[in-house]
Image (tube, rainbow, N blue to C red; front, top):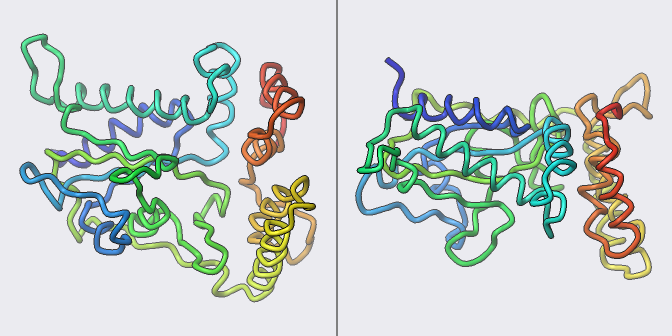
Length: 280
């Protein structure tokens, strides 16, 4: 029989992958708190599983794009939101929690609905308010999802490279998380064994920092940060080749440049309504 933490994770994965959130990784809350900065630790509850509660990291690769654009096009609550991606992810995560709680056989209240979700907490990566701040890249590192490179501050996935986004951490206070025997090893840092890529990333990062400090470079600032991600992948036979899991071109433009105002924002967001997924 599957453990409670593995059953809950499996149910979450089914629901979230259908929404393009294809990174779903369980960990023990203790593992994160052992490496987290004091201001970003997740306080355990006094009862339930406490410090050993199940935590689940949620993120995505380029797989998010088709699901998000479809929702953006069909649902005004997404397309017209101030922050459409955050709104889309929040809705998907909370629906997945409800579905997973029910399918995993939680306690039923007087209404017949499962009330386990009342013992879950969601920490969104964009929420930096006191008590909600999470060092989500540290979560990915200790969960064995991606290696956090301390120099360029990118989380590098073994398959997707740096082309991932870490969206939320879910904590289930009544379920014990995996133990050490089930712990996934942190993947190696590809930049540690590839000198050419290391130099390329370091140079791109320094160049991006220069642009960040210079207000005259604001128009091209986002392109410099994209270049840092692109620098992680080096094809020795073709230095113009991009990582095979790189975001779609429209996805790159949206994430890095859509939060501008005026005509640029309208042009990008209106373009999503005609997106058919052909770009690669």
